View 1 (cartoon, rainbow over the protein chains, first blue to last red):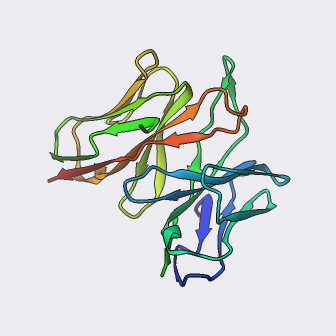
View 2: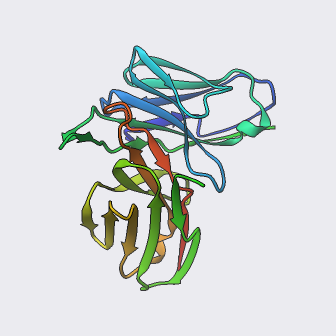
Length: 119
Length: 113
């Protein structure tokens, strides 16, 4: 079974509808992230969460909200979807930081992605 | 100008060729990641490095911190290597352990048989 799962994998919706994308992980990681990917652009961070009680905005959070229901679950909501939110959405997780000479870095593990189309 | 630039954006080669994908960045970093995105969309981490060189099978990643440049090499390329390769840097000095990643736009590699 995949360590990071996303549901749904594909969704087509209409402008103005509320949409929720869900992410679950079995890796036991504290940190979870939501990204969107658009053609020709790199992945951009929407929201991230250090633990259940910690939620932070990323670089493109307008129009989105999130909920960290448990350590293993992190949901992304579009309260009123608009066409320019059509994109591929990825959830990712990472473990607590490892320290090496004062810097910390950890691998991020990505879910399979959700392709969202807003008509 | 993007903080992370990859070149080329698209690369087509014949099976067996040696492949090089480049990544340049303009910010201070604590680590650099190379990721592979399969045609189906899934993303997997290939390498994470902060200095020197790492090798895994036919893949080699190098980084030059002074020049703010990294390369991903594929030896004896194969059609199954066809994918989008993404460079991402982790900014130095951001919240400890929170790992903000800044991504390049990706390089689409196609290996023909």
